[in-house]
Length: 559
Image (cartoon, one colour):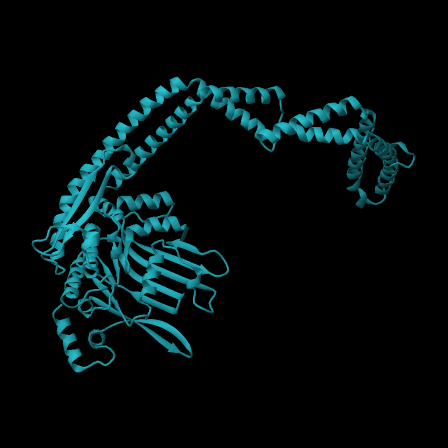
């Protein structure tokens, strides 16, 4: 249950805090007053994407924070444990979710002051809030959504996961078998090509980074004269001349040691000078040995040129580097081995595919049974609930179809489901997507949602103007249904219908004001007299009459 929502610097909101309670919490206000901003802010606390464009003009940051009283069921506890979020040992706890938006840096999400990702928040959000938005009834016209609602009612998540895993495994084996069969149809030609390529690369006997080493040796052979001169001069300067670095450093060392006898501050330099002499002498020997090793060889230069030409040819043919050529060799050897043993492998794969198909059929069959059982129960509950929203003559059916063609099997099973509906006595049910009017679709979606979620009393259910397109007696019936739902779980509803607003356990009005040339949104928790005025406004419009007030009092008295 949502107990507190704080919003700061979001859109037209400077800062507000809303304390929600049990039962039916209603938000009303003029069109464009900012009610949907509040719902969107709550959506942000369930893991929905939030753009920095929502930050109020002139502000650098924004904050959305919510406090929830949460029942820690098994699946939710698993999510907390997998996400590394510390939770209390009991079955109920307070959960504080905070989202910080910034123009300067990355947006951050905290759960009980622990930094988390949007993915973690989305997983946890699915356990605490369900938001049903404006125009959501249009989803009814998409038949693909029907089986999802049926599965949600059947609580078949575990079965669906197993079906998906089996299908993925089966599909992978089928793809491998298809690839092997295609290879087999061109086996002889492919074997010749692969053997030639493997032989060509193997004969070259390439070594990693060989081209780099050869280029370096080629550069050295082409500059033997220059290197000889440089190494001779360097050896003379370092060691061989009377005034060489080694000689002068030795003299300096003796002077420093002698100075140390009279001044102790130079004691620490003696070791450093000794080390420097060792480095200079070592470098001098290396330069001398390098000079003696230099020898120009036209034959070796020709060998290097020829080898580089061969390497470049293979690189152009099989990849841009020696590493790519060697990788091509490895993959070709593997593919050749697979093709040469394809008959045995193909038989193994056929047996594996058959076994995996049987496994998929078995688990998908269980899902099919679960759907069939849930469909009959779902039909009855939906029809009962439709009567509560002035559709007492309506008939509702869930028709499922089982596919026999493997090509139609999916990770969701081998079924399709479609809802059928009839609003009037004597009319046979027809495809809901074709016959439901806008007002009927709103009510049907409300009933479907509340029926599907009827066992999730710990969640907060949010309805954002789902009553669009209805009024009068129908609006009152919808309000009664929301009131019934609010008896078992917290409900937040944005509405323009006075019949629904009059049933609120807590009634909030959202208002837009202009202060000092700036527009801002505020929200008020109405007392009984203020609630009468708000409902009268919803009934009468801008000019509130005493008759409207009396009507509002009558509606409130009847709740």
